[in-house]
Amino acid sequence: MHSSPPTLRALAQARELPDHQVMDRGTLEWITDNAPPGHPTVICRPPTLVPHVTWFTSAQQAEGLHGVLHGARVSILAALLATESGLPPDDTRALTVAAAIHDCRRRNDRTDSGHGHRAAAWLRAQGPGILAALDVVLDAPLLDRAAHAVGLHDGDQPDRDPLVGLLRAADALDRYRLPLARWWPDLSRLTVQVPTWMPPLAHRLVVLTEEARLDGATPETALTHAHHTILAEGTGHVG
Image 1 (spheres, rainbow, N blue to C red):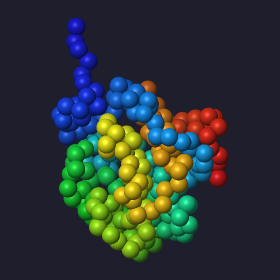
Image 2: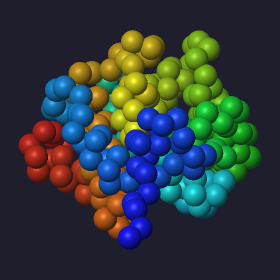
Image 3: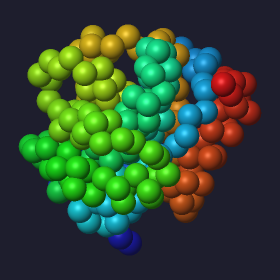
């Protein structure tokens, strides 16, 4: 008999994580069983921006922990944070674009120093095509601000543009997909206020979308399934 391959969680515990990391059922079961306290009592339904699989550096990256589902979830979380902070609609659109594509130029699922600046340069170069595919309209200054936020998302240097802090916060909230709890969101390190319902909502989004994807759903179907499930559970409302 062939033994099952080790889970991502087991590999993380053994400090043997590969360059390309994909969710598995064992790891997802552990994530599901370790939800943060509280309930996602508020949810509006912002437009979900789903990055295209061809925008990633490889098919492995598109399917991995920093792939299509991660980008789409971060765009949702960014839009929710934008609403909470009173960000203007034009700025919110720029933020959600930055969130959707912020990891598209990653070469692996490790730290990959410089991936933010690579993605920022790519967004500036390919902006019109990316915006058309996402069905979002941004003028040149807003596109540049989105790229600026992408370029700084993987650092911690302070910046006065609110898009930077909001993108970092949304990205951090999706860390519930990671296989060790010490890598999960640390709200004390963020520069924006995160409402108490958002960590449990972020966790639920990870569980529902990753589970649907493991069952064979497309990213778009997985995201729709998560939205409908959260509403059916009575934990949210559409704004």
